[in-house]
Image (cartoon, rainbow, N blue to C red; front, side, top):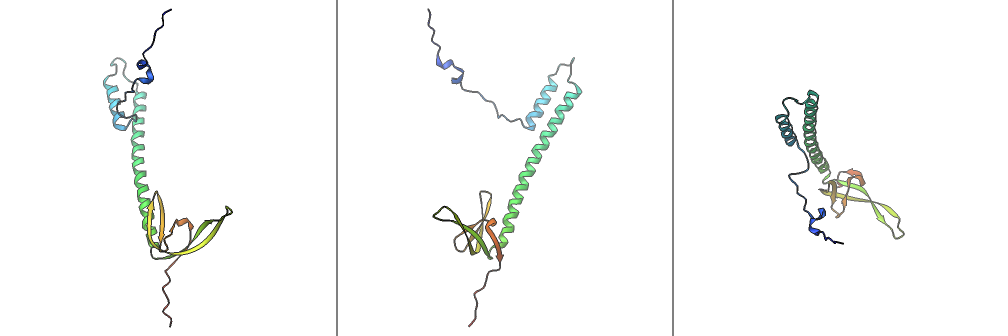
Amino acid sequence: MNNTIIDESLYLSNIPQRTTGNSSLGKDEFLKLLIAQLQNQDPLNPMEDREFISQMATFSSLEQLINMSRMFEQFITSQTNAAIIQSSQVIGKEIKYVEYIEKEDGTREQVEKTGIVKAISFKGGNIAFELDNGDQVKPEYVFEIREKKEPSTDK
C-alpha cells in the first residue's frame, strides 16, 4: 500500500485569489465590451439586430441610472443645506421642549423645559439646537418657538 501525502500549499483555499480591476461594470467598461464584441464577431454570422438593440438599451439604462444617482446625491445635499438654513432662523429664539428623564423605577417622566437657541449643529445627518443652558435638543422635541423675552425694566 502506497501512502501519498499531498502538499497543503496546493489546496485551492491556500492559493491567493487574483483580481483584476473592480467587480462593478460601469458605462465605459460596458461600452468597451460592446465595441470589442462587435469588432470580434463572426462576419458570416453577425449579431442579430434584436441582440444589438437589447445591449444598447441596457447601456442606455445604465447611463440613466448613473445620472439619476448623481442627481439624487445633489438633491440630498441641497435638502440638507436647506434644512440647516431654515433651522438657523431659530437662533436667538426661546423654545419650549420636552425632555424625557429616566426614573429609578424604570419609567420615563416627561419634563417641559425652556431655553434660548444659541447655535444649530448638524452631525450624523441630524439637526440639533444648542441652547444657552447647555442642552442639545432635536427639533422633534420642540413644541413652541417664540421671540426671546427681554428683561423687564419696570421700576
